[in-house]
Length: 178
Image (cartoon, rainbow, N blue to C red):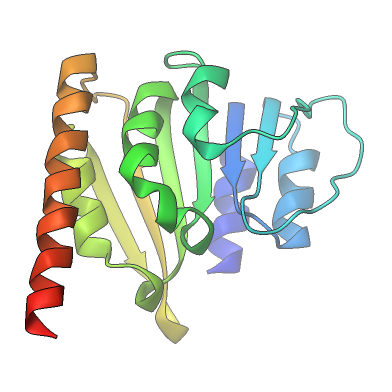
């Protein structure tokens, strides 16, 4: 899986947003790619010091809920996210990535860490192309092509409301069953 991620990173061009990458080889591949104009690296659960680079766009500490305000509409070309670092914030993060991403989003990690069917279902609402590659040791790379995604403020709000009531219903059902 790591070799596939390195190939993906080497093929990226334009602006890149990364979330949760802690592997030094992946970080150095992003920093050393000459085709990347600017990159923004964030981590939620861990802090990592990045080496100085002219392409790195430093930011103050950004809360994941405010990520949409820092990235304008269709400003980011590619996003690479580690699933364990952002799975708690998928309520808002899915809608936000559709909003600010032009081309593709890559998620990687272990299949057992998150329900991929739920993630795929939430992205399919926006009429995107999804390709999943599974590897040995329970690893995966999920590629989501957002170039033809339709975004609408009303649609995003509607999906957030549906997700909230689904979450409340699931918690209530779990409470009754236990």
